[in-house]
Amino acid sequence: MTLTTIRRDGPRPYPPRVSEFSETFWNALAKGRLMATRGRASRRPSFPPKPFCPFTWEREIEWCELSGRGTLYSHTVVHAAPQAFAHMAPYRVCIVDLEEGLRVAGALVCDRDPQIDAPVEAVVLMHDDGPLLGFQQA
Amino acid sequence: MTVTPCIVGAAALPVGRYQAPRGAERQTLERELLAGVVLDAMADAGLDKSEIDAMVFGLERDYPRQRYFATFMANYLRLPAKATIAEVMGNGMTGGLAFDQAASEIMLGRARVALALGTNLETGIPTAEHLDNSMRHTGDVDFHTPFGFTPISWYAMDAMRYMHDTGATRAELASVAVKSRTFAAHNPLAQYRDPLTLEEVLAQRMIVEPLGLFEVPGRADGAVCIVLASEEAARALGRPYLKLRGRGFFHEGAHQINEVPNDMTAYVAAEAAGKSAYEDAGIVPGDLDFAEIYAPCTITEVLASEAFGLVPRGQGAAAATAGETGLGGRIPVSPSGGCLSRGHPPWVTGLYSIVEAAEQLRGRAGGRQIAGASLGMVAAELGNYNAALVHILEAAA
Image (cartoon, rainbow over all chains, first blue to last red; front, side):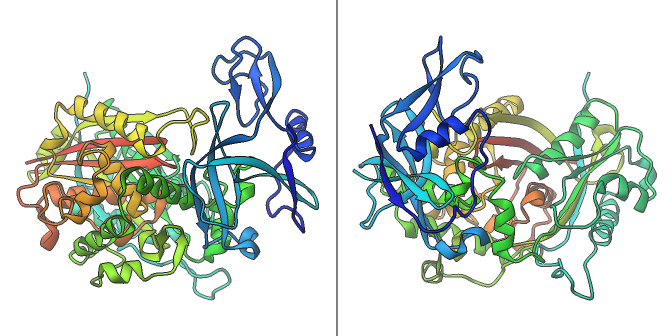
């Protein structure tokens, strides 16, 4: 499933580091796909992606695509922002429970009052220098 | 055979703003602040410096210039030590860990007298710049920080979820700030002592929703020193002291949010650490006369009070509003005034909590004294209460 991409002007305020391993995640996100890893034996997805299974410590992992669908667990609006984010304040962030049974955090894009437990879907916030993960109300 | 660690002395600077801005002609030196507090604490204990075998420091903030501060201070104080000298770090738990490690040195018989001490100096750094540093302390720098999460944004999301789940109102949460101020009015170490009304708390600008300016901690500096001794050494001093009666710790193996969805507001680490400390001490929460809790925000105090079994789950905000956790209440929580009014110099807050326990359990807390206090709990936490360190302290003489 391809996620909606929302164009964001300017570079990411605090860009994530990319490793040889995590590059797979960031490249996929740039193309609208949300990826996790899971142990080949455990089959248990983990997020953020890891080069091993944190539940069983097996080293054999595979990438798996997540639907991006979930529910809003909680959210807030940050008014007092770090210097790096001051130009964006106030801004929304959230915690989402994905339907694959994973809890993740991200930016929250919405123009109406967010409702806790309401369905949300992942979006790609495409900045000049790369993607970030966001969510919007479904 | 282990030795019972005791607290025989304590001293601290009033929580406040001491650090000068960078480039100011007159600077505040961490060495001078802390040395004064060490001398005060040792005078309180009635011990000579030659008795000290160990010093465990909470790691200082990144901002003071002097590094390797523990060994530097050993030189500054001309203090040889035969047991240990160390700086320990555990995020918000740092002060609690310094105390814990010093207590271990006594318990193992390596030290007869040990100091747990430290400074937190940060107010010379503007808040937005400080947040550029502290945002790297919570969550995941690659998968959370890029969205602009700040340390207290996680607590704000606790508050949003808690209000959704329990029907608690923002005013009920905010009542914790008013309660804290009532205690702090009687605490000479408190940063904020002026009376405060609920209307004033609710009228402040938002910091991170639903928490306004007075529902989150102000920026603060501090310096603290606790003097610990073996029970035999404590008894020989012939004055009131505190016994460490129980200890509990738990880390949930998750940082900020658990990738396996759970009830984030249940503070499972606090619950587990509390249970383990009560068991170790052979008590139940109802035996406590007070609890001094590391709780940076109104919501944190509510959720931690619930997790520690001091108030029923889901009713912490209502209990605070009803006065159960206030001065004269059923179970006073953070009688120092807590992080919100006593003040919150994060990496030594855990040590300030011990100072309050030492005042309460030696009957020296003045207008905020809990009558007949003989058993208290002190808790320190890390992040969104992913870990908690709990000590049960008992009055002795």
